[in-house]
Amino acid sequence: MAAADRITLYDSTLRDGAQARGVDFTVADKQAIARKLDQLGIDYIEGGWPGANPNDDEFFAAPPTLHKSTLSAFGMTRRSGRSADNDPGLAALLESGAKAICLVGKSWDKQVASTLGITEKENIRLIGESIAHVVKHKREALYDAEHFFDGYKSNPEFALGCLKAAYESGARWIVLCDTNGGSLPFDIGEIVGKITQHIPGSHLGIHCHNDTSNAVANSLAAVRAGVRQVQGTINGVGERCGNADLISLIPGLMLKMGFTTGVTPEKLAQLTHVSRFLDERLNRAPNQHAPYVGAAAFAHKGGLHVSAMAKDSTSYEHIDPALVGNSRAILVSDKAGKSNILDRLKQFGIGIKADDERVAALVHEVKQREKQGYAYESADASFELLARRMLSGLPEYFAVAGYRVIGERRFNAKGKLINVTEATVKLTVGGDDSMTVAEGNGPVNALDKALRKGLAARYASLSDIQLTDFKVRILDSAAGTMAVTRVMIESRDGKGHAWSTIGVSTNLIDAAFDALLDSVTYKLLHDKK
Image (tube, rainbow, N blue to C red; front, side, top):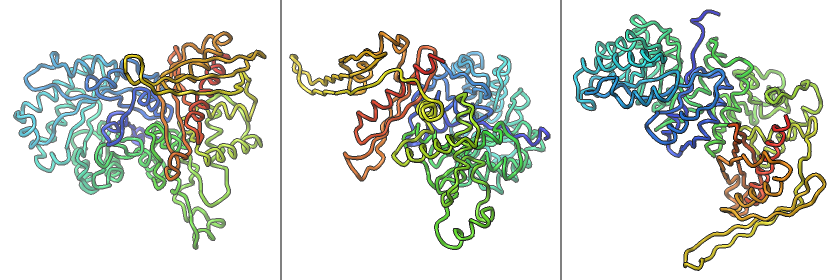
C-alpha cells in the first residue's frame, strides 16, 4: 500500500483530556494510559505541557517506556520580546526529553491583535524562529495552528503565512486546528483542499473539537481532502464538548476508508478494551451508546431485526463487531470474547489453542464476574491471575485464614482528633501458621502492612511494592450504603513495573483486601518468572 494511504495517529488524551470537566489524571494514570496507547499502536502520544503543572513535570521526569509510540511534549511558541534561546517555555520543552515537540501559535488575525497585542509580521516571525529553535536541537517539530479555520475565513493570506513560516522553518507537521469546534465538514474539506496547494498533505494534520458534534466527521473530511495526520483523544474526552474521538476515527479510517494506521487489524480488536480501560481509570461508567465500542452498539431489541438476524446479520450491522473487540448482544456467541481473551493471553505469554474448552470456560467466567461488578479492562494483573488459575494452575504462595480490622476515632492526650486503624491477618505460609498485627493510616494501609509483615520472612521482595493509586466505585447507587463496591489498586515495584488489580464486594474493606491479595500474588508470580 502506498505511503499516501498511511494515516499517522496523534493522541492528546493526556493533555486535552485532562482539561475536561471532572477529569484529573494522576501521574500513575498518565503512565498507564500511555502504555496502553503504545500497545495499541498510536504513532504519537502527547504527554502534556512541561512546566505547566507538577503532574506533567513528574510524568516527563519518569516517562513510561514506549516501544512503538513517539512521546510528544506540548507548549507554545516563544513569547514576544524574548528570543527563542532565552524563552523559558521553549527551554522546558527541550528539557523534557520528548522526541517530538508540538508548538501552539496564533493563526487568527483577530487574536493576534486582541490577545497577543503584536503585529501580524511579528507573529509570523516568532512562529518561524520557535520552530527553527526546536529543529536546531534535533527534535521533531509540529506547529499547532490554533483557531486556524476561523483565522483562514477572516484573513486567508495571514493564516496561510503562519503555516508557511512553520513549514519553511522545518516543521514536520502543520496541524490545522478547529479550536472552538465551530466548523462543519464542508468548511473543513474546502479549506484543507486549498491549503494542500501550498503545503503537501503528507505534512498536514487535523485537530478538531466537538462543539457542533462534528469532530469525527470534520477529521474524516480533512483526511479525504488530503491531510495525513489525525489528532484526537480516547473516547473524545476533552474540554467543553470534547475532542475528536479516536475510538471512532480509527475504525472509520481503517474499515470505512481503507487507510492503514499504526494500529494493526489484530490490535483493532482491542479497541473496545482500550475505550473501557480509560473509563475505568476515570472511575466512570462507559457510554453504552458509543459508536463501535458501546455495549449497545450492536444490541438488537425485538421487532423485525431480531427475527432476521439469524439469517442475515450483515444487513443490520455495519461491521462485524469482533473487528473492534465488541460483540452482538442478542445472539449467544463467544467469538468476539474468545478473540479478545486469546489476544490478552498471548500478551501474558500463555499459549493455548482457540478451540481448547478451557478458553470457553474462561470467557464464561469473565462474563459472570463482570455481572458481579468486575471490570478486567484496566486490571490486567487480576485477569492474568484468574486466567492462570483456570488454564494452568497458580502456585499457592500463601493462604489467608482470616483478617480483622479495628478502627478508632478519638481525641488524644493533647485534645486533637485522631483516627487509629489496626489490622490483624492470619496466614499460612509454607505450612506455618502466623498472626500479624499492624497499625496504618486507614484500613487498607493497615491491612497492607499486616499482610506484608506476615510474608516478609519468606518473600523479602514484597518490601519494595508501593501502592500508587486507589479507586473506589459504587456500582449500584440505589442500594445506598449496602451497594456493591469495586476497588481498583495500582501497584509498582522498585524496578518500575506497574500493575493493576481489582476487588468487588458489598464490603469496601473486603473488596480492597481482595485487590491487595491479587497485587501481592502477582508480584510473587512475576518474581518467580
